[in-house]
Length: 430
Image (cartoon, rainbow, N blue to C red; front, side):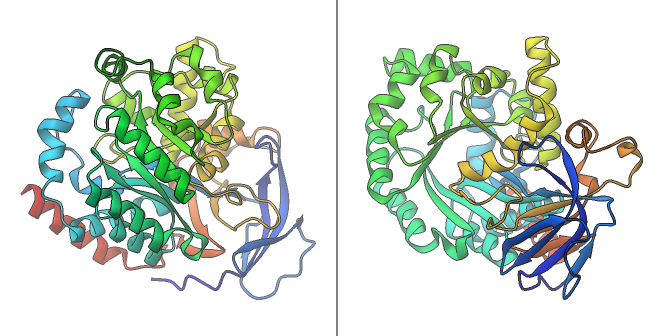
C-alpha cells in the first residue's frame, strides 16, 4: 500500500491532448494542493519535490468518469445471465438485493473501486442502497463520486434517506455530489416524479434516473401513463432541475432530441450493458448532432460485466458507426470527451475533466511505450487511445493530485477488500 501524497506533484515531460481532445503535445504539469497550477512546455518547470517523469512516453489524460453504475453489484456479477431486462431484475436481481446489508454494500463498492481505479476511472455515478456506506467507501479510497439513493416509489423514509445523504455528503472535500435517484418511470409514478423534481429544485440537487432503456418502457409510458416520454419529463418538472442525468436513453425519439439539448441535461450511454441485455442501440450520433450532452457509463457489474470505460469507449464508437453505416460519426475526440468532462459534469462537477489551469487534478496516466501504440503521433493519439487502447495500459490514477493507484499498487488495502468481497458474495448467493 502506497502513500497517497499531499496533492502537490510535478508531472514532467508527459503527453497531453488539447482541450478539443484532438491534438497532443509534450508538456509539464504542476499540481498544488489538488489543483492544476501550471501547464507549460515540456522541460520548462523545475523538478522539485514529488516528480513523475513521463519521458515523453506517458499520456496524461483527464480521469475517466463512469457516469452510471451500481457499484456494489460486483457481488451479483454473473447472476441471471442472458435474460431479458425485466425477467433478469424480477427473478434474479431484486430477490438478492432484498438481502443486502450495509456491510455487503460497503465491500461490494470497495471491490468496484479497486476495479475502476486500476482502469483509470477517477469518478463514478452510483445509484443504489445504503448510500452512506458507498460514500464512506469513496471517501476512504480517495475516489470522486456522484451518489443517489435509488427510489422505487416515493416511500417517505427512503426519500428522507436520500435527503440526509445530501446533507452529510454533498460537496464532501469537493469530491462528492449527491443527487436524487428515482429508479425509472415504471417504478415511480408521475406524481412521485413531480414530488422528487420539486425536492431537487428546493434543495439545489440533480436527478439521476433510468430513462427509456427498453422499448417496453416506452410502451409503458404511452399505454399505462397515457403520455409521451418528453411530455412526462416536462409535466413532472424533471427538465427544470439543476441537473438531469438520463441513464441509457436507448429509445429516445429523434423528434425529442432538440428539447434535451440543454445545459442541465445529460444522456448517459451504457453500450455494453445495453447490448448484453438486448435493449437496443442508443441513437448516440443523433443525440450528439442535436447538441445533447452525452456521457459514458458501464452500468452495474451484473449487467456488463466489467467496470471498464476503455471497453465502453471503443464499443460506443463502433456501435455508432455500424448503426449509421458511416465510419465518420462519433469521432475519437468526441468519445474521449464523453468519457471525461461530460461524465464529470453529469455528476455535478464543473471543474473536473480537462487538463486546465485551476481545475482539479484528476488524471489517468497511460503507457504509450507498448506495441499497439507504435505509430502514434501528435495528430492521431486520440484515435490510438480509443481504438487500440486498453485498461492494461494504465500506469497511474490520480484524484485531486493524489495517487490512488500507481503501477499495480493501491493507496488502500486492496487485498482485504478482495477477501471481504468474496465472503459477502458467498453469504448472499452461496
